[in-house]
Image 1 (cartoon, rainbow, N blue to C red):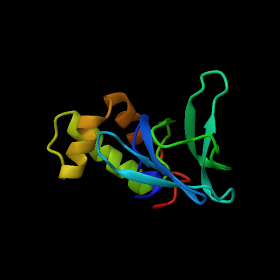
Image 2: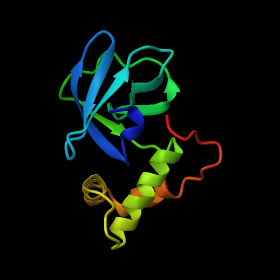
Image 3: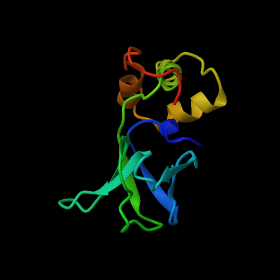
Image 4: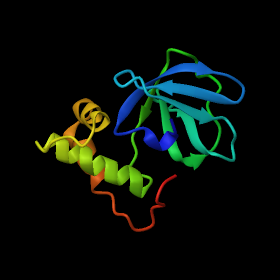
Length: 133
């Protein structure tokens, strides 16, 4: 699973970390995401000194905080980063409003997300977004 496939404002659990990457898992969907520790690739996990919480920023290049360990939670809050993701979230938003879900995956995500989060992703403008990331 790619980092852009993380959907909505979520808290993911760290399930593994090594010298090259950190693996996060969505506790609801069990979707795993690998965040590279390469400072030249997007995906940075930082620790907020005030709240002591970890945050994932998928648009910033940087390093993954070395204090992160399996079992830690990481907060994710992003807008759609590709047209493909925005379209998918449009289907999720439609399913939440009562339309028939286009697939099982859409139904699964629709049931696990807040309506506001799905609407925020779905309302991201296409201008400037790549087709897919």
